[in-house]
Picture (spheres, rainbow, N blue to C red):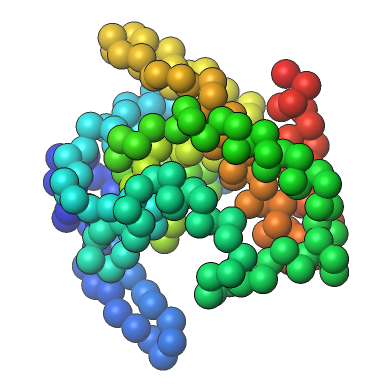
Length: 243
């Protein structure tokens, strides 16, 4: 990953080897010094937030392959869909192969509530027109557990298994969903304004991305039969809806 984007400072650790171990894929990278933000006190995390904002902003400045596709990045470094909207639509399709094949059976034989899910899915669909087709590098699982710091700066952003090309606002929504106390959404918008930029249709894109990530989390925890985590996501959605 880092080798493909040499302009980014070393927050993406260099990969030294990849391969297969039986049916499992592995990736070995240079170890980033420090520990995950998840293991730090909130005051320690806030100390390195300015560097994290700067690092995150660099993702939007990367020069990507001109015809590299959208969505999940394959082993050749290309997105697997022809457009970002195509990826978003296919993501909740139950007819494809893989982990989510037939996932709508959870409505009948699980804790996933169909009326609740479909109401918010419809709201998300109404916002699709605001989602841009510009291509950015998206981490896909951007939260404090995947960010390494030595206490002074960000030394590594790791676990790019869900890396994709699409709208960077999805990473902001992920961070906000799991650590709302950091107010990353507000801070990044302030940072962008201070740098002389703006994020078009941010509110609509953010709500779309937040619903997308939240609905995906609902079906995931329903699949795991994790009632506690499922209800936590529902409370997050309801609180967001209340403003």
